[in-house]
Image 1 (cartoon, one colour):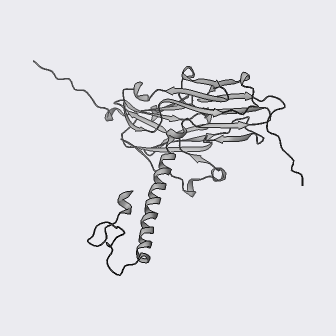
Image 2: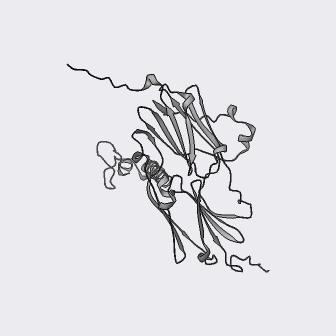
Image 3: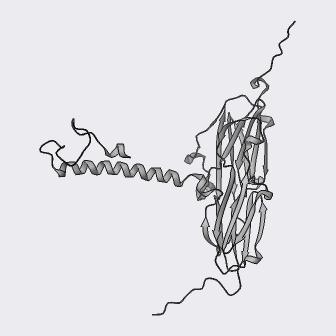
Length: 133
Length: 165
């Protein structure tokens, strides 16, 4: 079972650097489950792999990082339309199904972050062969 | 909406202007109540409209338009879109970006626990100012972002006009 965790944004877990940043956003996510595990897909256009952190702690999977402004984004450039999210992002999910946390894999490609979370052997459904005579 | 404004009054059902009000109740007593009902109705409507406007479908994919001395840059969020499925078209002074994104459902055997990401086809149009050189448009797809650059025609573009007194 997987649920959206409350987004913890209390003052205590904010570092000064984060507090100074003006913008936080939550990227959209799809979560799929099959017998082998969970697949999470996040929209992360423009995000660099090195700016993305995935942590799993005490049953909570957190994806966080930052999307920097493009290199050519100098103050001389006027914005006519601005819908794009930039800044820090974070999403947390509580996973109650026993998982194999050592085998969590993340892959950022074409602006999509895909995370594979394999279930622990005990949490998988087993097919039992029925023998007849 | 109707249900909010209509309010039962005594045993007589809804308010009508003729002789339905109990004796002794003047307009001054009914008006504040009517106003209260209207406030509720408008508040309801405002929230509905806000919800409608904030739906991601309205602004998906997100887009930035930036301008400097030499060029205009359009950035479109298109994570997971195959560049082959992206179409940039210029017709007159209207730039249209079309594309499509497949749902994860087609690629996976799993079942959805959450589905927040948009899928399907989309298009956005951007009106271009006449001082960009549309013949020199460049489009590039990188890390899920479509970058479209339009150079400006030298010597054309916004000018600052001095106001004399």
